Length: 248
Image (cartoon, rainbow, N blue to C red; front, side, top):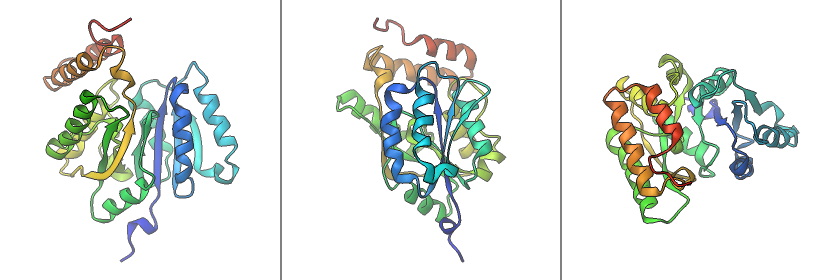
């Protein structure tokens, strides 16, 4: 029987919104995937030069112009952007990646290997780009959560068969916790969410403004309130304001 990896293609979907400071690093890293993956950026009306940087980078890659695109989502919100990218993706596997994350160079091979073994979804280990003890602890707990509860967040690079993604209705059109909800949908549909050996390095920037410990506790509180069924739009408004007592 022919392995799926001989015919399937991975579509990398990257939501963008005012990511000018970090997207350049990701663009250079994506060079290793140009021959093997479709790359789709989905901007949501960035007010900085994010889209211009991406478009300029794509224009220089004429050899791969058919497999690299920048789309413009009609609605803001990471869930809406990723669903929009998935709609136009040609690959059999959808891999959702954050703009401030750097995945392992052999990530597509790791993805296809686990898919060939019969899985329909998965994610990677995560490590924050900081050696601060709290960030090391946070990385450990994030990976442990996937191992035990099969719940992943976006900075762990969730990937899923496109057919399964469509059967699940894609990302729920909610302003927060969309990755948490997708993980639940995958798990509740009877599918596993294996944790691959590779590690994604991601920025700890969102923990710095409010202080690492304060932000970690605040994020955990929001997650628990979501699980209890509190209104997601109220939680999203609080998330946008940042943790209580945040630094100026």
